[in-house]
Length: 166
Image (cartoon, rainbow, N blue to C red; front, side):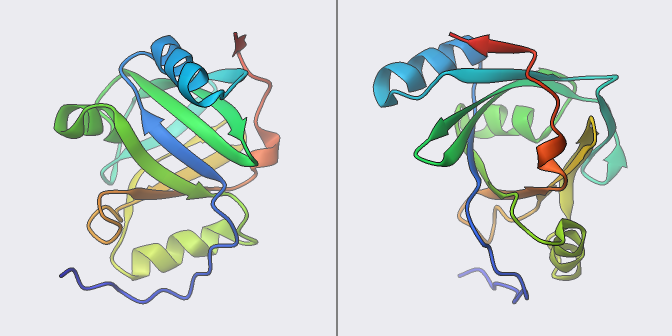
């Protein structure tokens, strides 16, 4: 049994459920056909819009394309890694496609949440800034049965999507 550190964090909502996929269009087609999810908004997370990226505690370049859609008030995210090692490429190598992380974007002070997770020994696995939106993934897989937890700040400032599908 894994020891679980106590955090003074209360999750106000699960804002997002995210899956890593080998190919984004195939993923959108499958989630649309089976679950009726769509339309999708696509974002290319790559420089220059993506900056200040870290991976496992070190500055590191990576990029991905992701698609977002609503399912009953919860954001569904599909992520296809494009370049560089990342927690997404790790997931594909170790587990294949599938559930990767859950996220809460409704914290009053997400920067404080980052501090609390780090202080509890669940540091930042990967981070970056997309436009004006910083995001952090925490090392929670051992405590949350393989699932990573993410938060972000200033999500309302996300730029317009690069494309929509279908």
